Amino acid sequence: MPGFEWLGKEEREAVLDVMDRGVLFRYEFQDQRQGAFRVREFEEAFAAYAGARYALAVSSGTAALKVALAALGVGPGDEVITQGFTFVATWETIFECGCTPVFCEIDRTLCMDPADLEKKITDKTRCIVPVHMMGAQARIKEIKAIADKRGIPVLEDTAQSAGGFLGGKGLGTFGAAGTFSFDSVKTLTTGEGGMIITDDQGLYQNASEYHDHGHDHKPVGRGNEGRRFLGFNYRMMELQGALGLAQLKKLPDMVKTQQANKAALKEALARIPGVSFREILDPAGDSATFLSWFMPGAEETERLAGMLAQEGAGAIPWGKNTWHAYPHWEHLHAGSSAIKSGWPFKRPEGDLSYGPEALPQTAALLARCLSWQIMLGWGEEKLEQMTQAINHAVANW
Ligand SMILES: Cc1ncc(COP(=O)(O)O)c(C=O)c1O
Image 1 (tube, rainbow, N blue to C red):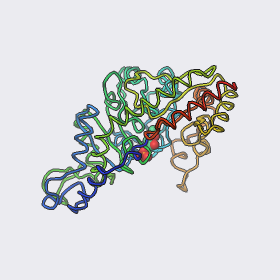
Image 2 (cartoon, rainbow, N blue to C red):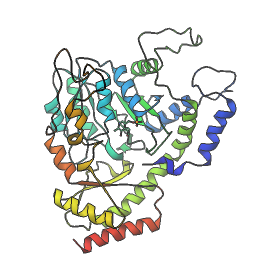
Image 3 (spheres, helix red, strand yellow):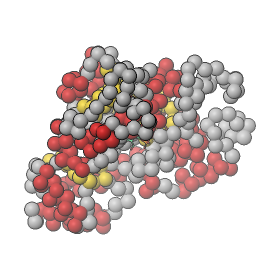
Image 4 (cartoon, protein in one colour):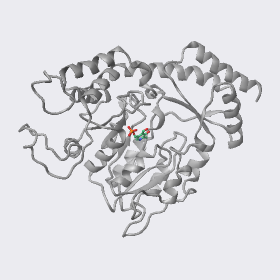
């Protein structure tokens, strides 16, 4: 998923152009910027690419989640459901809004299991946050149908899946809003950065004001604008907007390259006895940042991981991962907080606790799951070396 591999003269020229104008701020400076509004142009181009009416660029994917949740109006007393396989940022932001994260199992898509989602909904559920993990689709249509029946908004965490589609429709456009990350390891990168997309004008307006200290952005000049509510600063810089525009032009080719590299390895990997692949709902819309597969059991997973590592083709064993897998979020289980009062775990209305054993289905799936991150720069030689590593494992199984 790394757009940094394709940082080139286009990005350099775009950044230097911003420097030459001397305007780093997305608002104001009308005279000096000579018509260049790079963050706004990036928003417009990204919205058009993903197929959304509105886009708001922010400072990170974490900020995008925070701003979107605030724009949806969720807060203390509200439960927000997400999945037990994601980056910690998804549920950090739920806590950050004062809400209670509720964790849901994943299924063979490595994303939210709709059957478990049904069980986790209560009369306090105010938002559902499925995560399109590792470049590909969650069962977003089923999740949306479950949420719609109860009038609960869906916020799609699409941080890892820019360039992903389902049936030709952009990931992030199914729910009330979708959020993206452009951090340093994502397919489209601006170093740090994020985006919120939505078709809802009111939601966009809330997000736009909240991410900029409440400024209502009416054209009366900064400092004279009105405000409806408290906000914060999650603004994106012009330098990032310029980078984003240059990277967005490359995104379709990045996805094609990832898809080709992934297909080459998948074919070879299928020869290993017992391998079954992650369920991809729409292979044509898979942004193909990862190739993920399951072994029959934890023992086979460990054995294959060891063999591949020895051949210089090490895979990620998700069963041991501490940043993405619920069973290993020890700070969550211990209720560890930097805040002396113990918030957000200790609350006047009752303390929260999260046991490491709470998601057995997720734990069992991840214990059998291995992934390769697909790189853009893998040429024939590297693919051949990885195929040899697979062949070696087949021969010695
Ligand atoms: C699923 C998910 N959500 C949110 C984020 C947060 O994005 P950022 O690093 O831009 O804050 C990430 C980052 O990897 C992620 O993977």
